[in-house]
Every structure is written in structure tokens, then in C-alpha cells.
Amino acid sequence: NSKGIELSLLLLIFADVNSKEMQSGNQSSVSYFFLVGLHHPPQLGVPLFLAFLFIYVLTVSGNGLIILTVLVDTQLHRPMYWFLCHLSLLDMTISSAIVPKMLAGFLLDSRVISFGGCVIQLFSFHFLGCTECFLYTLMAYDRFLAICKPLHYATIMTQSVCNYLAFGTWLGGTLHSLFQTSFIFRLPFCGPNRVDYFFCDIPAMLRLACADTTINELVTFVDIGFLALTCFVLILTSYGYIVAAILRIRSVDGRRNAFSTCAAHLTVVIVYYVPCTFIYLHPGSQEPLDGVVAVFYTVITPLLNPIIYTLRNKEMKTALWRLGGCKDLQPQ
Image (cartoon, rainbow, N blue to C red; front, top):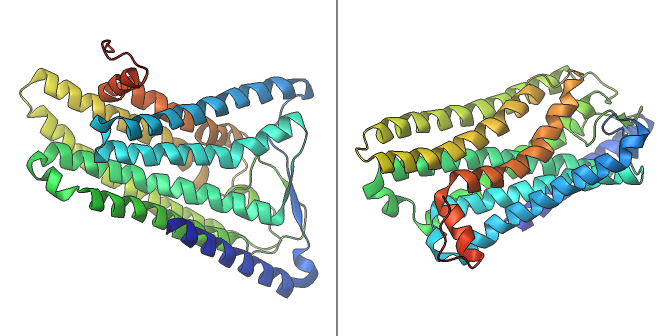
């Protein structure tokens, strides 16, 4: 299963990192890192802790509510909402990979992370983020089939096909993150060990390497840039066909419902891609705005996704009302 594959790949990363440490001797002497975190006055530590804790609780509960609603409501047992469950699970886990350590830094001033912990955090973040990138593309393709080829949709997008496609996004994210993580931690880290960021990420780690990182920066730019651009072009192509098909719908209500469903997906795609592009297409930069942008796509975006999908999707709002026991009331 996918969890077994992920565990095996993680063990391969650790084995590679450990072998490099043994070969490098004293050159790779760093055994832990110090996460500087977000720059803020000391008196704002507790308010920031409470604010980010509130956002984290809302993120986990909101995405968890979407998963529960889709699983319980049989009217939502369709590919679109099956993929939405995967998106909600990814948002919960991305936030959980970053925010708890950030909260510990605010309240307990616990900002030390072991070398292995840093490897796991970087791998997890890019594994989940890349999987989400693939999933957005898959969701656009699903909408393309549903709107442009409605007569063939049920025969093409069967349950088994959905399962294989969803598994493919997770496998693709795993392989991509394995490549990026192993490529970063093959570099020697001999000090300093202060990560000027709030989590272990590629740009921050490249600045700490005791070697020339030009090749790494180029590979990061080409690899992530190509991946993001390819997925984004596929999404735009799908929605080009979708918009053309929607404009041919004669019913005003039909056009409105189709646009409402697609608008939610397009909104979350834009919210996801814009900050990621800003960060990873210049991995060697040290812009002050990088930290703010990173907070947006690691903390805020996972919170916005359930809000956008529930506000813009009438079926989801209706299902939430039914889940709450208000069967006779319908959302406006």
C-alpha cells in the first residue's frame, strides 16, 4: 500500500543521509538545526500562538468536516467529492507537518529540530505539496469530463479509475519529494545551523550548505518550475474547454451551477499556485517577504480551501445542512 511505499522511501533517504555523513567525516558535523521562526517582538509570542492555534484548529476541523460529510452523505459519493476528500486530507496533513512546531516556538521557545526531524519535515511538506499539485490537475480533468463529455463520464470515471488516479497522485508526490529531499541532504552541512525560516524547506536549507549550491538551485528551479507549469497549463487547458462548453448551455440555472462548481476549484488553484511560484522559482533569494508568503500557503491556504468549497458549492452546503439535521432547510 501507499503508506508502506512512503515508509520504505523515507528509510532510503535516511540511509543515504547517514552514508553521506559517514563519508564526509567532520565536514557534516551538524546534528540539529535551530529554527529562527517568524520574526516578532517577544511580547507578541502568546498572541501569535493563540492566533495560529485558532487557525490550526479551524483548518483541521473544517477539512475533517468535509471528509465526514462526503463519507456520510451518499448523494456526494461521486468522483468530484472523492477527490475533494483527498484534498482535505492533504490540507490537514500539510498544516500538521508545519504548524505544531511553529506553535511550540511561539509558546515554549522550542525551536531546535534534529537533523532527521528536518529531513522528515522537508520530505513530508514536498510530498504533500506535490501530491496536492497533481490532485488539482486531476480535479480539473474530472470537471472537464463531467461538463464536456457528460454522456461518457460515468463509463470513463469509474470507482476503480478514481482509485488508481488518486493513488497515482500520492505516488507521484512521493517520488518527487524523494528526489528533492535526497538531492538537498546530499550536501554537507557543517555550520551554521540557524535556519532563517519557520520550517525546514529547500531555500532555507540551501543557504546553510557548506558547498556550492548552484546546481541545486538550478535543479529546484527546473524541476519544480516544470512540474508546476505543466500542471497549471493542463488545468488552464481543461478550463478553456469547460468554459466553451458552459457557454453553450441554454439553461441559465445550468450555466450558473456549472460556473459555481468550477469557480471554487479555480479559486483554490490560484491561491495555491501564486505563492508557491513566488517562493520556488527563486530558491536562492532571501527576500523578507518570503516568510509571509510561506505562512500564507502553509497555514492560510489549508484553511481557505474548505471555506471556498462550502461557500461556492451548493451541493456541499446542502449536505452540511443535512448532516446538521436541518433536512427541511436549504441554504441560499
